[in-house]
Image 1 (cartoon, rainbow, N blue to C red):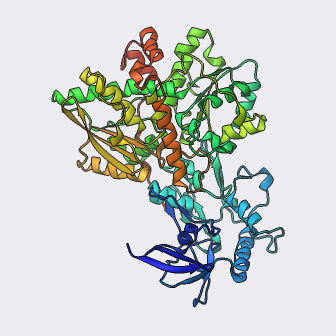
Image 2 (tube, one colour):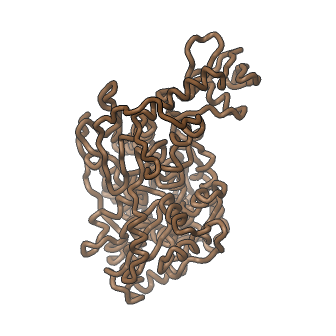
Length: 589
């Protein structure tokens, strides 16, 4: 590729043709401030509307200042990113943004993590020359997953890019014009009235407190203090690969043992593991795959293939809203979170002699859609939810800091038994391709009756948006596919709807990179390397597990022997499976 030579702040730079000034400057260690810009290299996430104008630079021979994020490098270009004209312009732009922004930073849920707040400190803005800017009549909204406070919106349009271009959901967009412009579902709708999937990717990229997760930390602290409650925890696989970042550890540091210790120090009565339920999910989903395959090979025309994974609630919401005519294709297996709650409040509670009403099941999840999932009526028994509520990785970090627990210095400990025993297959559930790979390990051995020639299915690993492979299933060519982000899921579903999808099994996760990039994870600020480090950590945990196949988990085997009988049994169907609902609505803009 042809390279272009230019000069930035008196430094000689050579970059590929088409490179923007912002990227060229970053390549030599010059950090130009931005707010609206977001670029996750290696994924389909890119937002550069050049709307905030904070990245302006001075280009020799050009009269106006240029936005670095949208100005391409040209041969022999001379750029200044730090002239007095540039510094003054950036400060004025930031002051104007502040003019209609609330000054409640101390009580804002994004305090300390707000990109606007960090920018104001960087630009040394200590007074507000432009005051009393009119706050538009924007709606505030609280759903079970997401809190919107549009007084704090700076119109960076990152959320719009995520919702429309990456996820192709279209629940958020710009409405009205001029000073009345706002980012909203529509003129008269709230998020709860739209096809919002609660994936939380809008929250993950919002630079201010305009979009945050619905906070359950006070509810948890109250339950932990209540002597009449037995509170149990179930942290998801992806949480242990990211939580350390909140305490100064490098991305991808596994904190599995510290996590178990920290939850006990908080006051949880029992600390179990969602990885156990991931193994259980593979048993149910894996046998469902086998059942459909065998019936298909026997000539049963009623069998729906491909069978699609159903672990991701954002994805479940998406196909219920967008593809209600295809609800027979996804597996009916519940997510690991939901399976854990059902088993904890039946099998385990009965063994322990604990009344269901006294038990509080709290999940720690990388995902904000999990907050919605626990409210679904079909995941309740006797009107009581199987999982009482879900908190995000970020919320757990806030609670640990509030409780003055020195996380980095904690010793490692194990999860409680029996719902804390897991395999390497359960660990990789947190990354794109992981659910499919875990299922293949069990499906291969149960179908063929032979041990796997190799544990890893590298064919389904990676970060490409859509990946496909053909697995030799003892002579049967099993065609599989992996997709992450809902935009890629839509492509898959459109192909299915038109009869052009030639796969047997498809895995879909709503978030970039899967659960490691979930809407409730520590903010990664557009660094795809962070997602890859988290992904690598989960594969490392898998490699170091003594058991790496879900069907070999001894506590899973005991659960079936003592309580469930067999995968897809009547009791399994009642506790571990679900059904889907037509949620299609007509959006009006």
